[in-house]
Image (cartoon, rainbow, N blue to C red; front, side, top):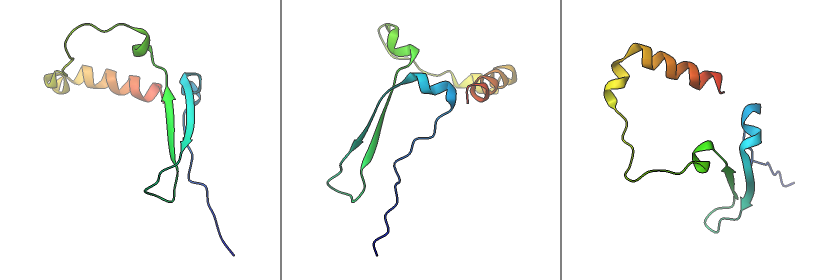
Length: 78
């Protein structure tokens, strides 16, 4: 008897469902499993970016107010 299991799942919060653009199952020649590709639309993709690159200011991590605000934002969006 041959036992097979599916491993192709993405777990997302309900608030992210509307942002899903596409999901594909892609065969991989180097493995006996297939890869899952998930495309997500974000607000960043709709906005034009300026020249140069963004660099995070590490000193913000020592600011308790900033860390608390970001933590709340992340946990509210889950």
